[in-house]
Image 1 (cartoon, rainbow, N blue to C red):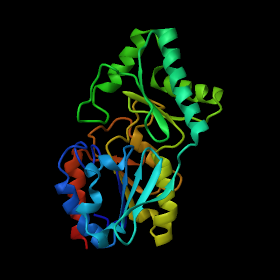
Image 2: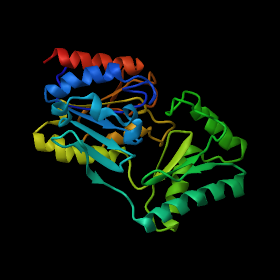
Image 3: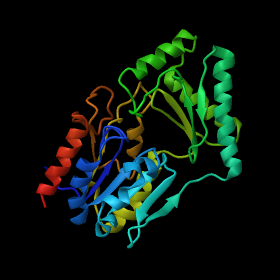
Image 4: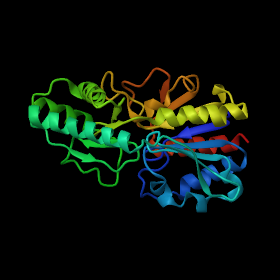
Length: 291
């Protein structure tokens, strides 16, 4: 087992089974690593309030928080902690009101296009910091598991085909980019099958920031960095999973591990280990035993 100095990981589905699940197990494993000076990075599309119910700072000793970082909101926020253990914004990518309205307008026009030409009904979440979520499976409630479910790829493909839309998920990404350009905004679309996300950043922007401003400045090499997630696999050809965006020019030589159990369509530099959150927790324990 290699000893790592920087560990990046997704939250829902990798560190915890879902955002409402107990966090005691993973917290008990990351505290000793932080205390050893290991840099840990939570990279998630959600907000701080959905990471340990917004109480992460109170669960970890103040002296350890200096080594913990969060890249949240699909590239919107890069967060850290000051010497007093207070959460601070290190950088952000929040659009001004004009950009925000262009993103919203583009998302609504995707909704209109699918409804007008194919009779596909969608809902839109407008409240995310720098992107919109177009719900393609409006009758599918994920309940507490707010990440890709095993049958959702086939379900959304069947839905699109049943309405005569033959371009698939890759076609929806291209549609989002095209409509974005028509509204003078460079949309970077992603999807987890249920949602088509339309915004100006991705998890890759979080990773690029931390690779430059934390990993690089601490003289940590790519050989000493690893990334863990449960959505690295391509949903279909040409459509990366959300965690695949953590593979950036700065991080591509690092080690990548997927706990989903899906081995098909994984990017070439990602190792499928399966085992869900238990695999990640076991890895954390193994790392601590190396120190």
